[in-house]
Picture (cartoon, rainbow, N blue to C red):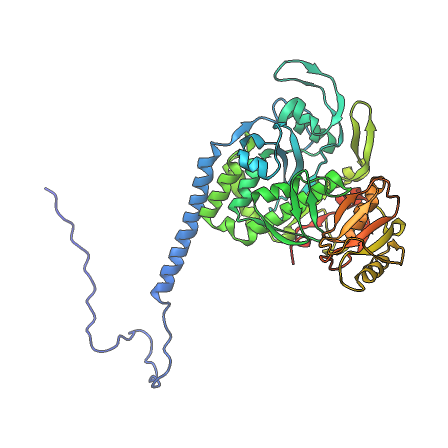
Length: 501
């Protein structure tokens, strides 16, 4: 028969004879009337602190649970299979980010709206190396031109079993011939940089991610117009939706810089995308983080080692990012039109400068170390110097003296104007026009850059003198500067140098 153990005796309850006073301390002096009494921390503060801790832990748990559930849906590839003699492991993490054509997953309406006609090519449209520093406080992004001259290593076609000897190609052909595995091998051979992870993103992923973030803000000093993609942005600040952003990063027929100019715009957009994600505190909101993660992982392909922990690691790193935490550049280029028999014109790297760049990444050092942020340059980069461009100005409006003012402004900007502006035969012109002979199209683009919003009109047989018919939309002449597209692309750009305003 069990017995209940006796309860320990309780201390005697104190008698209620007024306020409690400690017995041990010596007597206290009389309290001054109305003196302030030290207050204990209110219970609501303790509850708030406890609640906050629970919320933080719950948020982390929700984020991990969400990403874990989506992790299984990522399409897996094995770009590192059977790879030997790889470069040594450096410091930090290197991700090869590949953008591919995925227009077959976009609705017919979107394909028409954003000029995505034609058949999907299942090829690489963009290639970047993203280096995340070991302390997770800096991201360095290096663009690799898709037309870069490259030599594919010997490989065996996984589909046919056919063996291929090393041969020269353009870099984007590595994906077309051997998929992610051959792409990684080729990039490692060219950069001597070990790739830790592989991520492949298509058009659909890109558009959905931008839309989930509520759009991304970009600013442009000069109008951007590309009839191939349908991009048409006046000078100024714009918040781009997913489809508009796709037009922005795909356009390569805006100026003479072609693909190099397109890569610079991609870098600027990626900087703005990072700024948008961090400044809007998306990464601190579990539900918003879930939506962004779903958009990103909706149609991404990744290596088998890129899992939940890596995604959360990137998310935690970006929470501490500021605009200056990201830096962007393009691999240094020696020749933008390097002819190769059977390939045509390719982009040849500057091997000495490229090795220095990738050595900096291997050593986990910032690309822009010790360099203060550059002030935004309001001058537009052009290919042809204005001093060699002869211009005849014509006033197409009823505003007296407008032709003279434009002529003077163009001459001040360095153009060789006639100094004798005329009245145009056509009156009431709304939009300024630049009439040019197609043989001098590069010079015409320089002149159009100095006249924001102007229309270029080819007039065969006109000769070397450009004609500017000033419209009522004219506001000012913009300064231009000559710059080699390759040198411009290789300049390191920090995220705080592209923020609008």
